Image 1 (cartoon, chains in turn blue, green):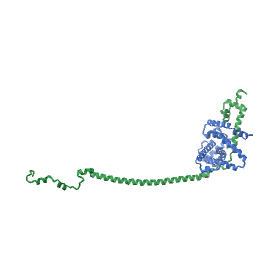
Image 2: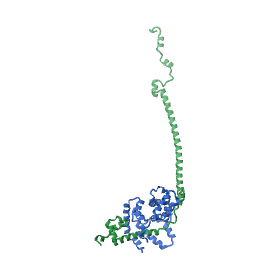
Image 3: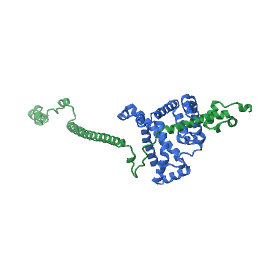
Image 4: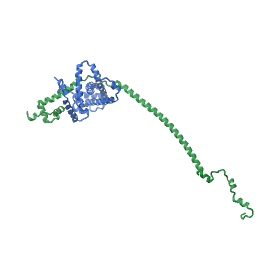
Length: 209
Length: 183
């Protein structure tokens, strides 16, 4: 288990920020290998970020692919190289929003794609040999879903970015294009609801040694 | 412990401390540093949040399909497989719509030309009729019923016939013999 103090002391994502900035500079100048290195560093966190919001591995993989393709094409537009990480997360947040917008539209027309697609969670459960792990995992995600349903859209985004994606308040403000005080307000409200959610809190505290 | 220190943090302050401890008033920050109970409450909540992040990461599946960069100068391979047939379908539909518009447009233009030609012929015919009428009026501007009065309707009655009907006065004087003064 990682305590918050330990988590705070962890370097932001892919290690050295200076290294990331230099890679971004090289990639922006057309160095594909540098961009490939950036992909290696950020693909897992971005994939997880998308997965937390879609709960589908297949969708998360597709969206992660799209996000990096967009990043690759739009890297020349990035002015502040040090903001690559927040720029990437912003793109991911927008992409997930688009995904849900399209999904709602498809649900209205009930296209074949939507109806015939097997539930990715079921597919995943079939592939995973450990049934007990599945139960624990399912219970956890069920409680997270139930908790996130109590949050407003903005509260959920801020809460997830802070405590699941480990972004700082300043980074969240950059990602969502909001002031830091607005982010703190949403975070405060989210935390209040988190503290009131006894079942999730109980599960998290019970699992600690 | 002073009285000030004994006043523990309220829940709202505790949540505020988790959001950003620096936003708390200085007195509460001091209390938080000194009070083990309040510190414990704050740490407890923070540990739960850390656990949430850790579990989410642990229970999230691993990325099986690694990100593939688009081929230099082309992005086709990076797109999902279903994207191509969708694009083809859309392109086909657009082409069909364009073809319908072109055919319909051509037919409309053709119909329009025919209609225009017919209208033009009709207009020319009407112009001809009008000019005939104008010519007739320039010949004789009087209406038909006035022609009887003016004698225009009897064009065959020439001067010889009129003289026969109404002889001139000169003829009358000659015929009257020697008694006439004028002779």
